[in-house]
Image (cartoon, rainbow, N blue to C red):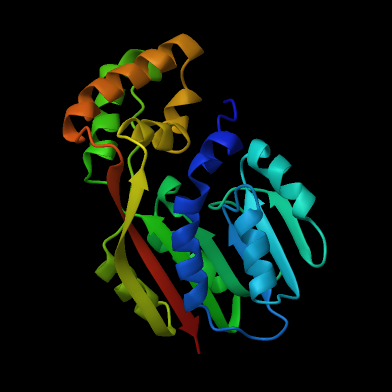
Length: 255
């Protein structure tokens, strides 16, 4: 299927999307000569911030989107590089001191298996830092799924199902995997957008891309129109528009 990730569309809300990443990096314990893996690195700008802030020896950014990696590759150098790959696939060779994933794991199922795999790639004393959107039960997500059911024929029955766990479930999982220190919290970020229409632009750069790559251009625009028609009544017509967005931030350190 086509790569429908659009770096320009995604970065229209760069400041809002970056805030949780900065909070996540603040949870990490700095150490010398870190070897870091960033899963779902996107355009690479935040991976570069991570690499420089922690003065890492080596940082590898991994992403499945060629469009995103094209934007990331100019940041290559001084121990920072990027590679194509799937988060749920075979990870780069060798062990890491830190594995990071920012707003990417919501696209991947079986988080218990994923975190177990990540732990096996960490050196003793290694750290894991993950940020995941937690909007599954919000109309912005549930109505996208309802719209997909309305378009069942062109989508061949496909509906994106998120498998994000509860914060307490992630806390238990980190404990079971041997992370002797941990921080897990649900945080609400209040984003001030120009209008409610900006919410649609927000999701054109993220959630809706999964349907875009499965539909022809005309049908996708019909999908977006139907989605907006059902979502709009749930959003106040305020200018500016206050958009509360929930995210799970978690960090853990092995013994």
